[in-house]
Image 1: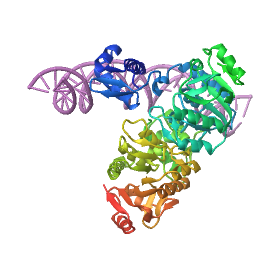
Image 2: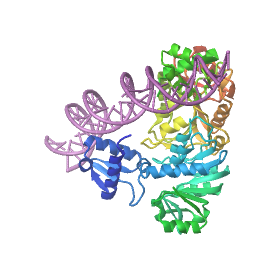
Image 3: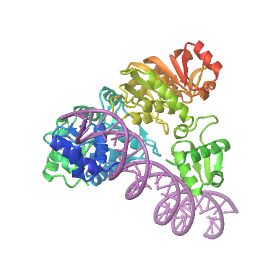
Image 4: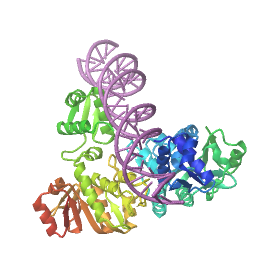
Length: 253
Length: 253
DNA sequence: ACATAACGAACATAATCTCTGTTCGTAAAT
DNA sequence: ATTTACGAACAGAGATTATGTTCGTTATGT
């Protein structure tokens, strides 16, 4: 994998400036122009930006989330701890629907080899669970994978979810507050989260602390739809209390 | 990736002997015992064999196909040529359902970036097509991935296929003759092939020459269900004529 | 219970692949 | 027509993976 840090910087710089030249980016990152061009190609293939002769134009709206590969390493340690705790909450033999997003991919890693039936809602999570020794049963949902993200959405995904009943849904989010509920950047994602939650008896939300002060565009479900929340110790205390008051069992790890 | 050649030899030796010791395998391959153990672990995780203290027992019935990773490199050149020819048969804008199997993964490679709507029926093919720049629309079918193979089967896959109508189905096989029809080693696979073929207007079969003299356990469809066959020049002439007589347009590349 | 053989974790080294920068011919813009 | 950017091709550095060795642990047979 290319230098993620440089990709992140490029993404951010282009997003802020709206449009930026190759030479400027090379200066900014300390890399050669050739390397910058290769990075731009890669980011273009993830739908982050558009290239034109001499530079690139951002395709991310202000405040929109950076691409999957760049988010994966943010708060990685916290995500791993959260994932480990979630794994402990699941009992052998359960059937689980596992949402898309980087935190949920970590959960998938933590579940490898466990005797569970898992339906991951994103391709990266599928790839983590498939071909592992051990007795995990993987069910792939249908759907259209979203560019870069690999999150499966659309009618095929809805249909796959509707055909099944899960013991537990593990859902990620872009924002979660007691007042605004669980929100996502993407409308289709929110739709799938809602459907997944509707076919599960128990709902465990996972979110690093940073997400508990945000609300994103697309509303998925109210906080009261959640059974439990697993977050880290950077979560603001008052928000945790508000969520607890809404009936959510909160764990900070 | 580990040394595929050694893995193939181990697989074959264990399959022939039924059961074989680690020391023998080390002698046979020229590798150290530790390496053989690691190989056995890997093959075990692919469901090829069982380990016991001192050696391994084959889980492949006589004549059963070797695992995906080992088949991928057999007749690789022929598969690539076949795949290239199939790519030429597809027109831009078409919707295509792409069967599982190593040949079809090559077809997926040949289709990267093309303006098509593709539903690949195996995870390796999905991974080839996803995240590629270009305008290929990928639809993931639901289903249970078969260990090692990644072929998607079961009711979820059937349902995904039943919900759609394709212009073309590209199907692989384990055996194909005018008399026996198109056959597969796996019952579920055969079922999915049948369903895929039923939802497509045009059916292109792909098979290297070696398959045109074989019939496998599970019958999928008669030869008359095929529109075209793309094979290589190792195919026996008389079989090609029999297939042509059954109404199949045959191309050898 | 004891001896023996096999196992696998841990480390070191070799082989391989990936990333980055450079050069240079080609293609696009002014 | 000229300039500038582009990307293919190659080379070296860096990282990753594969393999072998050693050694303590575990399973099996007597």
